[in-house]
Image (cartoon, rainbow, N blue to C red; front, top):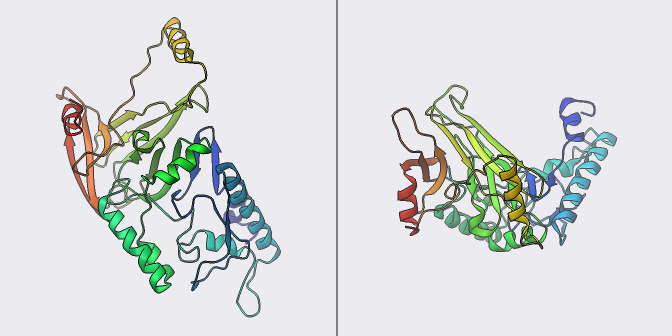
Length: 329
């Protein structure tokens, strides 16, 4: 209801937000959601066909349009908070639809999601996605979209984001285990961090257990940030990785040299970014986290992940073994 906790929260919220080169949203930016803006008339229902909407060209226009939709939806709800006499519609119904894959015909920027088997994506997710999309169209069944995990490796979506100045996407949906699932920018030019850890340890009463997961964006400006991933896994092991800085191409080739000289003059030593976290091994496993050495261990190990759906398999490799598998040594 207007004036309630959820209403007040939504009045201060955004559907999507851009800070420098980073785009924040709850759900996946994929081939179905990128650039798509639902019409204000969208119903919260199981439609027999896609409901009205429009496509916009740029990331900035898309973000503004989605946030404008939120504002209008909240105003509509304030004006018509109750169902009508026929219980057919109510104010703000478009916002109910926005977070529902069925109502959005698979185009929900709130509930579409990356992540499968504890990884940012898997081969099995690609097979399921292809079959589910075909099924939804063939049977005109919007419920088929529930099985779809979005493709973070989509080159077309990455190109659209890069044209809009976006080199990092941070999302919260859906659970990916006891640390964030990451796509390194080395794959498409866009780094993706999927950071829902609400089912970090299914064996624990609170579903989190010992795990603590942090995603920190750090840097001297919004245009030159890097992602730091750190925390504690469900096993109690600590992990930390600093991903590469994502910079727009500079018109001044000597700029990085001046930055290095300034750092040296200030007595600071630039930390080397981790080159492995967020990359896929040839056997399909993803390098998910850099696990810090425990007592008696000389080197960090890398948590590698594979799986399908809710089935997750973990293994540990040294940095040298990861590079060997990638053909880099």
